[in-house]
Every structure is written in structure tokens, then in C-alpha cells.
Image (tube, rainbow, N blue to C red; front, side, top):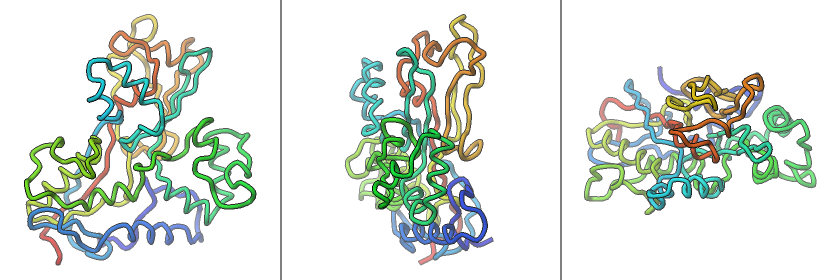
Length: 314
């Protein structure tokens, strides 16, 4: 079946029937993708709406959620890397998080892969929905003026999406535009042989390098490559094997998907149920207590999905 319109991330339906929002979202996403771009070899990265064709091979491009530059810079002192990664301004792998503490210990960590473009468009079309979602997922105390100061436009860096909570990306290079822009980057004349060779814009991010490397490899085979529908960035899994409770026994399943679905999570909370008698900060990973959200982020697998097949369409 040909793709007629891009869906909302994880096929979310925040607006219900009859809204103009889905059409506006499609237009926004489609506007970020050229009809066809010669990224490497004989293939193309294409806009699947403008260049329909058979692409029946889906590929999950994956990386982990903790900043690779920080890990490289502090490879001999991981704790320093974790501490530095608590700033949203350095959470550059398309994963951002907010830590809540009780008596100095981590009680909850909330992770998001939601893009600012989605929320800014939703705020322009359905400001009431944005306010309702903030109250549901962050705090019932969210006021309209917090999100729309003075009755004006939506403020993405509002207090409930920075200091007091998290809803969507605020780090400037985390966005749908960046994801799709990197996907259309042209490979240098000397082919990248691994992810370390594929560093777009001279940024050493694990995510962008991985996206470039995989898209180029597919295009060099003469394939037509496109974003899978729905376009987006997702948490497709997490690995808590080896994590232990205070008594040394394995942890339970303390992950909750708040938005999205298994394999395509957009918002995930990690929190120990109250009945357990301890908090996240009492859990140990490799014998070390969880002091920072980055220790958890390092175990989250991130993904963007592409489809490929056939020959390119010129």
C-alpha cells in the first residue's frame, strides 16, 4: 500500500476525529524531506509520499541513550560522565530525561523522545489539548499561563518542561528536523567504514553517526531508502539485567510506558512501586547505586526506523 500521509509518532491520537492537526503534521514532516537525495552510491533517500515505491525491508537504526561524547571524554571516570549528563543541554542522543529526588535519592526518572515540532504544532492547533496533556503527565498544577505566557504563543522551555518536569526535547539538536536532516546527509567521497567515520556536522554523537552510516550503506546498494511510517524517535527497549535491589536480588519490572507503545515508546518512567520499600536510588547497577539518570539512559536502546527496497526513483 502506498503511503498517502505521514502518521503521528507511534500513531498517537491526541486530538480525536475531525481535527485538522493530522493534515498539518503530515505537511510539516513532508516539508522536511526532499523528493529524492543522492546520499551515497546509486541509491537515494526519498520522500515516500512524493516518490512511492515498494520498500518492504524495515531496518531499526539503533544506539544507546547516553551521550557518546561525554563517555569518550570521561572514559576513565564514568561517574563524571553521568554527572555531566544530567544537564538537558548535553543530552544529545535524541533522549532527554528528568530526575526527581526524595531526601537526596532518586525516586523517579522520566525519559522522552518527543519532538518540539509535534508539541509546538499541537499547541498552535489545540492549546487545550496541550494543557490537558501537561496536567496528566507532569502535574495537575500546570497553569495555562505557564505554557502560553500572557495568552501568547506556546513556550517550549516552560518550567514544566525544564526545571519541574519533562514533556519534549529542549536540547536544540534533538528534533524531527534534525533526524530527517541527518538522514539526508551526503556521504563524503571516502566511504565511512564504521560509525566513528560517520560524524555529521563534526558532531561526535552516537545517534547521528549511526543514522548516517546505516542510510549510506543501504543507499550504496542502489536501494531507495525512506523513513518508516510513523516517522519518529523511539525507545525500543531497555536492559536491567544485573540490576539489584538493596537485598541483592534482581529488580522487578519498574518501567512504565506513558506514551507510545512497546517497541515504540515516546515517554517512559522508571520508578519503584511504593510497596517495595525502597527507591530508584537504592538500586545498584554493577554494584554501584543509581545516582544519576544517565546510568539508566545508558541501558536504553534508541531507534529510528527506515524502509528500503527496489531501485531508486529518479
